[in-house]
Image 1 (cartoon, rainbow, N blue to C red):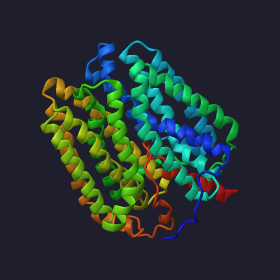
Image 2: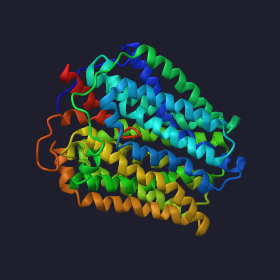
Image 3: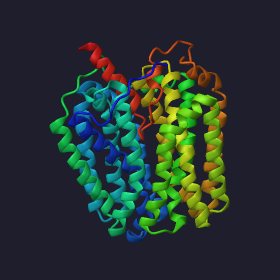
Image 4: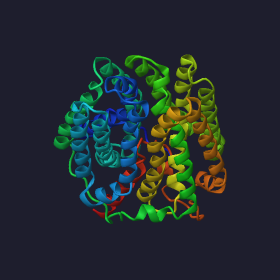
Length: 430
């Protein structure tokens, strides 16, 4: 693998910092609502399963948008797609804070998911096209934004949620509006790729065995992950700020092990064994929660520790998918994102219903089994994972840009790999 020249992430154009700031706020979104979930149930007289629909609507819309985001950005360009996503987020986050019903929040959260999918699919493309230092400088900035956003999201959500459950929604709207103005003014127009991406390409790509199996494993993992993220706050019975600190600890570990831990484990043990260990460890954590779901200390400790396994899995799975799939990386990214977020979207709502009809142990036990099932699916795909470590796709072809994949971190939408390729193809054309 080549060694990138040292790049200072601090010597960048203003446009890069404008987009990076927007990335931080966007990455806050996934954990921002966690601390206010119990408050929403109390204030709006809703059941936990109704409140978890905030995740379901957001992630199901995101999953569907994965099929078309690259098709859109490849036609209108990264900047236009980026600004469209930011406008949608500002509008729907503000509307979510203004409504007085849980149904309204769920609907507006779906709109938020639409905007976030468009934004995330092109944010790294915008950074790459403007950053000094090429890919290395862009990835350093993106990783910094990812880590700060994931860690700060729950804390900001808890802080604003302590004032009012509306606070996190209005906070995102204001901050994203600032990012929108800065991006519109400072970011130059970005070139479009030489070839537009077909909206049907991601579905066709799932006919490849390696990509399909990786996507199914990711669906099972996301079922486990979002069961915990979407339902664990309810039995903890903590105030918004207290929940914010819990998920802040979780977010710090997710960021740390995404950026630092995962590459080191991959280098020493390989992708397959590292993923098996991370998923098995996550399954153990979920099994402990299933056994003691009403013990607050156990719940808090397990949620925080799970960040280790989540960070490792997110990064290594995304890297492997981008190398294994014998299709263009934007297409692989879209196909993978579509499948995995279907699982993430349905899991929190299913957890709420399982608790209502059975008991608190069941959804976490099912989540633990889902994580173990993901290990089983990956085990049937071991040859593809070994090929990924060798820089080859599932058909045995050498991946010429495999080095560029190493070091990339999975964002919450899975859009970073495709974004890089769109910029590369665009610059090849001009």
